[in-house]
Image (cartoon, rainbow, N blue to C red):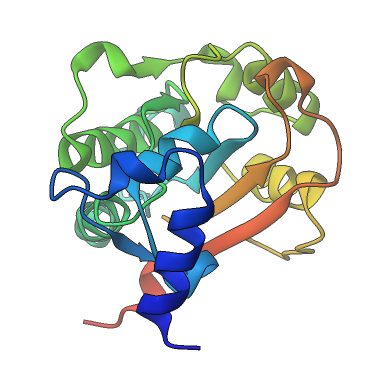
Length: 213
């Protein structure tokens, strides 16, 4: 079936289809509907599901062995990768509405790059102490405490916690999420408080190494 025709059929069948018929809501690429989706439908999706973008911080510097772990900055490659990945995230349908980050400088700088590309207000970038050196149990606590007004949230943290979280929620079985890697997970829940082990769908997996410069 022609992709544009398939998109129109899916659109017409949706109760909010009339809201998508004007130029105010142009279609955007989404592989779930033959390559196209409508922003209005994406917002409606949040009523029955949540999307979590799990991000491992970009590459950090080890140049100064005397620097405390939480104070280690991004190196030049990490700074470049964070900006590039942020631009990619900003041009995809699953754009996060809120970013929660570890307080570690390398994670915070990665989150700041994402927030800048997304044009998020300062209050939508939240530092949560629990994300640093977190286990999957710690990260589940963070996720379950998220405000349900946000249907799409980005969580920026560290290996192995972030990798383990992807594997806990989905059947991805990742060995290691690369630095500045982004794993988008769709959760079949109405509330963040209902997130549980397994049953989620890994809908996107990307990393700087997939885009050699």
